[in-house]
Amino acid sequence: MNGIEVEAIMFSHQLARNTVDPEVKRQLAQTRYIEAQRRKR
Image 1 (tube, rainbow, N blue to C red):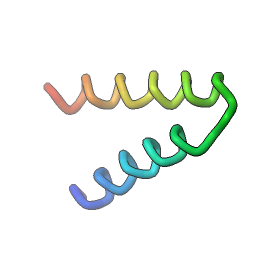
Image 2 (image 1 turned 30 degrees about the vertical axis):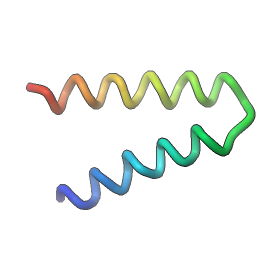
Image 3 (image 1 turned 135 degrees about the vertical axis):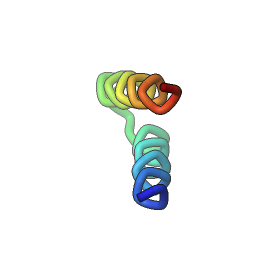
């Protein structure tokens, strides 16, 4: 399961780097932030 989570995180970062739409970048960043908070628990 850990490998799937790592791949999802890496995909999210790559998508954010390669998109020009600032709204998409904002939503991806927000999703990554929420997911990081969940992993800390």
